Image (cartoon, rainbow, N blue to C red; front, side, top):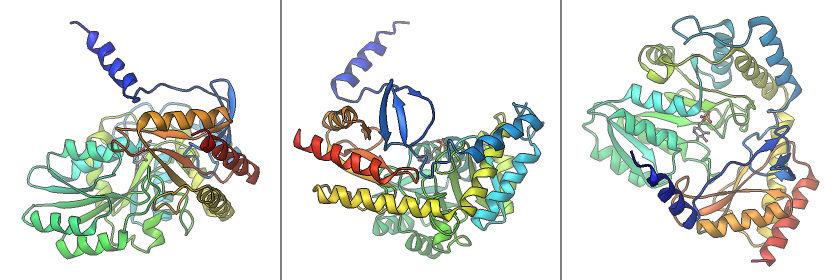
Length: 387
Ligand SMILES: *Cc1c(COP(=O)(O)O)cnc(C)c1O
């Protein structure tokens, strides 16, 4: 078959400022990166607590390899359910205050698998318009009706719940701390609506896990809602510095997913070293609340500095600061000018965010120093003048 469509599509992407290419990182995932051979301060990573290169995680992974080897050999239901998988799940349930937890190979697999396992024809999923691509794909796979409500719009969510009151099962799904906007879902109100209309609530805590008090458990725990949110999903690859994902909830939920969730059943389980990293990371976030405190202090310093330069940062009060630009090409230009000053802040474009809302997504880490942040502010000031 003729494959010239590949070049045609790529040309279209280049012309519309949407072309993506990979940058190569040499060395570790720290607050400084070597990016395509050049040093830059890293304001684009989800390694919020600096655990990705932490000695405790390295040691835990090495010890697990020495004791258990490298691969897990099979899926969980065959011979891939190792001691460390269950130990990590118990730790996660403890962290989240739930009866049980189940580990997934990635957040993407968790979201697509969980939503499509829970729902089918005759059901409805009510989904925030800014939810992550993996949630959107989970809705598509589920063959249930999908009702997308405007970002954090409770009135529209309630309209959806009324319109679909006859559905067999209803699931509201939302991120807690939104990945590209850094704002929080109105979780208390969502839970109240869910109870009023008989819907389940599923949250994605990918960016909240590790960050919120108490103990980095997430926004659900922070608001004391663990008993009222049926499905708490999150990842181990962001603030927890490792890889993989989990869902926390009832023992029945865990059991159901083991039996029904295709992205859990039909995949080789994560290797022991990855489980050991997760266990070590949970230990660290419990033991070292200072990391979260430093992260908050760093956020305030950069946020205040950017606001003083005249930037508005949406409703973010978190470690994710969206600096609005608008058009994709202008956004990538600004990102490049900053990089020329030694500051890496990734431009985010469609389809990750809606057209016309391209932005720099600036993320803070607990391992940034005041000097890193002040150098970033100088770079922002210089690139603003160049505008
Ligand atoms: C990163 C992310 C995921 C996917 O998690 P991976 O483990 O990286 O596959 C899911 N949801 C949200 C909100 C995310 O930001």
